[in-house]
Image 1 (spheres, rainbow, N blue to C red):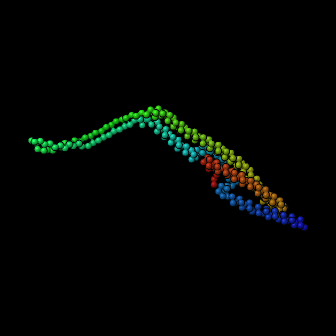
Image 2: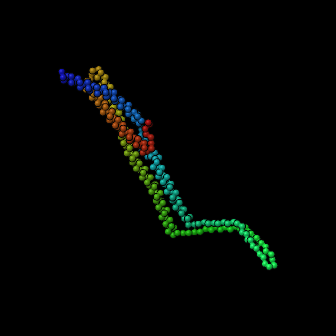
Image 3: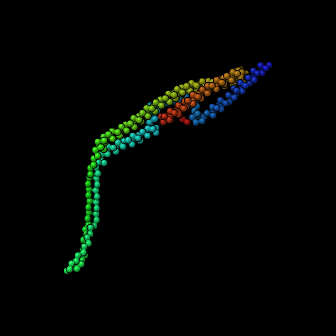
Length: 255
């Protein structure tokens, strides 16, 4: 009698767990439907990733490329200034003056009374000249300065190409991961859909008395494990897709 009661209690516990799972699975699935998590299995099935060439090209629109372009323009401007530095050897000067010059004088002697005399004239004066000064150390080092500036410009260009190559490697890594996770997710979606159908049939069989609570609990447990595996793969896929969007400056998900 005790064994029978214990068996019934165990079955009732399993039944309670199975019923709870049947309610909580849709609940937790609904809780995940926020933002990117609102994407359905059909969204992933219909997802088509762009080609790598397109992603590489779009990656050139990043802020890092803009920074290198501005830096190259700055280096080019500095190079132009250095090439014109020979003009500092020449100096041009000019002056101009204009005014009135006046003289006041007084004269007298024993036979001549005192008288005053004033004379004045307008006067213009100007000077124009060019001077040349050649510091030998600066003059002979001019070629080296231009060469160094050319190297700076080339170094910035190489640095930008290096960054783009590294960005390509990161894009390839995330692209490969996204393709892999997408393929796995599609397979798991099929398995989960099959498990959901089995779960619904099992619930009907349980209500009709065709299976016991233990069998129903086992089927629900399989469904729960498949759902957990599906959500984990989807999380990894979403992470790879979001990182790929940031790296390639390309929108991949409609959210």
